Figure 1 (cartoon, rainbow, N blue to C red):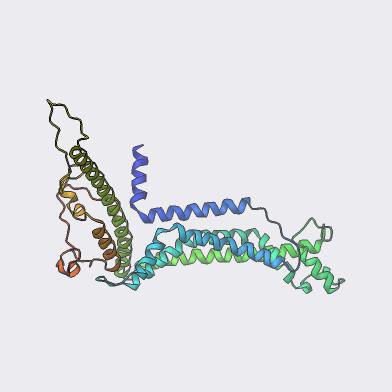
Figure 2 (spheres, one colour; figure 1 turned 60 degrees about the horizontal axis):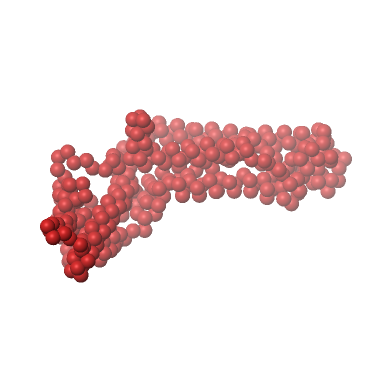
Length: 347
């Protein structure tokens, strides 16, 4: 159980590992879907190309959109691109790096489907059987043009009476399958060469810009994640204090109306309400920055300011830079030694 817990914490704290896992999962699902798909070409001259190309390109498009939806960084990238500048400038290089990372992971499953379809050859044969040049095959010499087009449209359907046990059908099908597999293996080789060159040549260039963009892209993702966690923590603490405050007020109101039944030899205990610095877990000083926001107007002001004016990336900056004119002060949080921060801070 300890190993599973450590593994779960690693995936939870590393967005890159989670996205790589989702990418591999989508690729495995793609292989399973294609292997279980029942391919049935219509064998009609007007619909063969539409069916074959649709089956070759439509599922990859759906898988590409699923990859974008499953990747959390795609949403973070759009938010970083569309957010107001405020006190933090936007770096186009970071947005380009995040876009490249998102597209690379989202394209994995569609490429797997396309390569499987090309290496299998059924979609290619169905889509281009009617486009084959009849002069390349001697068996069509005695046929009229209309008979040739009808025969070519029936090539994907080997059980059809018109082309059953026909050498011409086997020749055309074999020709298209060889062409499809040649294209599939060429794309595979090209992708492997590009990946090899990218991995081997990258250390030959200056890594400063790459490391900076990678760091700040991880920072943007982790910052939003930590903000969401802190908002959940504040909402829980705020709701707990509101409930305690409600019960304390009800106790006072019941006592004022004489609804409290107390014995003569026992005085009622005064209501205990949480102080402004008392935390739920006894660490009041650690939650003082959360308990300072204690009304709906302040919460709305905080969320609006976070969206419209992100704090500057300088913890030593003057509080007036971000919190002037009655706004929220941006201070460097002082953390006592031994205080454990969130697990989402490893970049």
